[in-house]
Image (tube, rainbow, N blue to C red; front, side, top):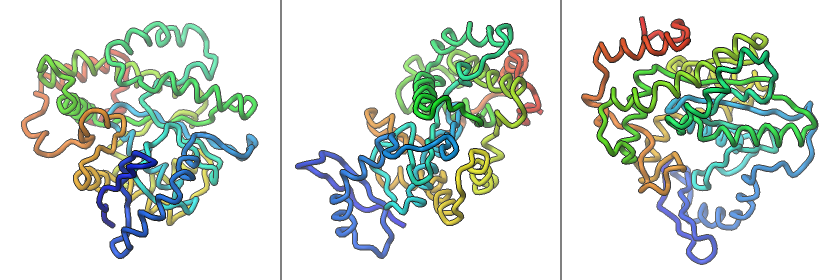
Length: 337
């Protein structure tokens, strides 16, 4: 597959659109077809279900990720899988909504850096007071981890109202090797010119990344302990990437979304880091559309950026001790061994 040249709809749409086309297809015909169906495409991604669905038919796929732990990878998989199942022309170009609705699957997909939605379940007060008391303080340290939290509350509220008391039945939380995660977030901060004081990797991690991650992770760890088995699943991205199709097949099964093997195969390929990296390098655009107003900052870090950027042993020991003392269980972090 290849990326064709930029198409500018100057008169009506005032948009720059990059279409994905097969190498043997006529680019001009693809552009013509896209132009004719542009308004319908906008309707398709307007976050609404045009026809009523009952509780038995509706699915709510609710994914929370730590920063740089597969957020956009999930979003693009859900988009491509939905498009393929709906037999809809695949494209990258219209800003991905959050949540993403697929009427064909009767499913709403939500992905973001969010805490466990404590408002959904009523716990014993002494078990959640720690989280509630610290939420606003930690969010002020680094709001990037929680930039979708208010959205998640509104989404859950809207879903429960529309589907008469619907309560999400499953929650996924995704994290990764913390040293890789913090390094990736540091590199993105540098690309985005958000590290104005030129903090080192370790300084930036201590000041902006450690506690927000620890607090977010601890909410899911505690929720997994309190709720019935299987309600909250905590996955490590490093393990997921060993077999992405297996992971997404299990995810769809857990959320009761029908599995279409061909859509699963192609959707997994197009959402892969390899393809999205190719997209960024081929088009000059970022796969993370929240960065569109920041001079098209690349979302995926390069090997060259990572050279020489790493934690010293004593710094890794500090991070390990901090997270374990915060309450996180060591068995989740093989990198601490």
